[in-house]
Length: 129
Image (cartoon, rainbow, N blue to C red; front, side):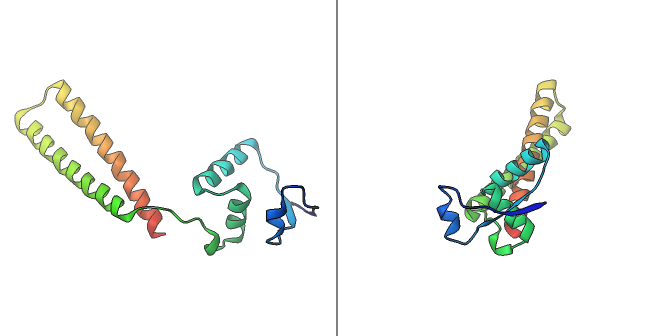
């Protein structure tokens, strides 16, 4: 890592007002840069802000998620209802038998509900951490 002091370029005035005048340089591969950019974008941060947050481990600088808890609860309740409906479908299919279309449609619905459950669980985990 090479640590250098740079003279501020035109347009960097906003950064100078908070005293950031030092830069560090890190060499990364194209793949690593793509991963860093992706993670910074998902966090809603610039690459510099993301790197500072990760390097310093500053809890106050971590991004906050803007999630409507009421909407998350509603989505969770809707998901529970969908799961209940799928259980009723499975019982009917097991009791009366299934043709190819019914089984395929039920399988597709189970996969969608499962994916939605995974997404909601991930959001809940993100909110808790």
